Image 1 (cartoon, helix red, strand yellow):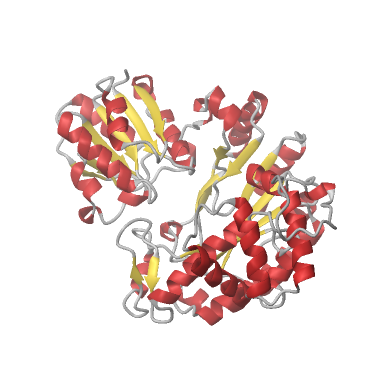
Image 2: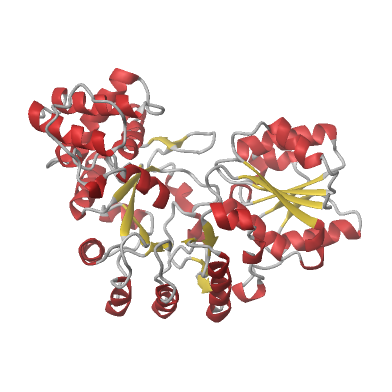
Length: 499
């Protein structure tokens, strides 16, 4: 067993594993003594501890994130009980700030606050050289992209065959949106492009066809964006699929012309709108030209084959229910393929905390630190909005209700879907694990009973969606006079696989 073990409980967020590969790639002479072991969020802490300790490593490094901190805390507590001599190092965004308030930091020997790519190597060297006092270990400096070794050779054949491959062409973000940890970055720094593209070419030749770029602002430097897109256009085949995060109000014409050349099912853009409220934008230091944003969304939707995933956030300071409703309705009119309705979370270290007192913001004290109430939205209404977000993803974003969507949302998407959401929770008491067949029945009933839908029209639309879903049997509302077009058969399955 290696002397150094790097691990994380990555759940579905496998960019955590991407970070571990960066650590291993930059260990220099210690890389041969390091191994990476990954776990899912569903494994028991005692089983994780047993496996990690099996080879008696000297150092175990944990990547700690908002979604795995509780499980990692339990795992470290167990390790320290049975093997107190094992050195525990934690790092990651969750432990980079407010360490004194966190049990996971108190249980660990060392906390790396901030970028760990080189700091973990430096700490391990010190530990192997002799006794080192435990405590917070601060990076000597923020590493620049040119100082780092790429981790892509550490993707295994199993990763290449079965995983989305995360890559980054740049680090950092020049924007200061206060709900985001990237607000602490001074700027964005690109990796040397020829070197980066050579790594992508090696991955492509190994069979990678699904690339997810983690750059916060892929279209910040247009020349680089175009070169990367041209790289993929030259290698386009039926299996290639790319995901980028875009600044919504920055699409110059020469970038548009390249985007237009991508075929269907090959390109996805994640576009953070977050809020259309100008007062809220000013409060959270978010610069966004609403008119350009709208025009660019319309252009992407109508002139390209790109899949648009747009984000809005519930609970931002200064954003009332009425304001959020107006923003959602405005975004629905622009017709992105998906609208992710997110709930504001208090990320440790994010500047958003400066608004807590003035706007009476109350957050869950436990992960994921979601907002519970503020001066404009009380706890009861916030709970309703949480359920709204869950049902929205289950129904609108799933792709399963393509025909029914127009009559569900009609001319007032927010208020109509809120009525449906309230009714669904009243009837089921659930926001998760609703069997798909029952969900179709519920949506049909809700449309007729709560949204005053015409029975015949509603039955026809929902029956079309039911048949396209691939479910067997005939639902009670199917009048037998509808056949789904071939183009939408199994649409939800395709959506889950590709997006």
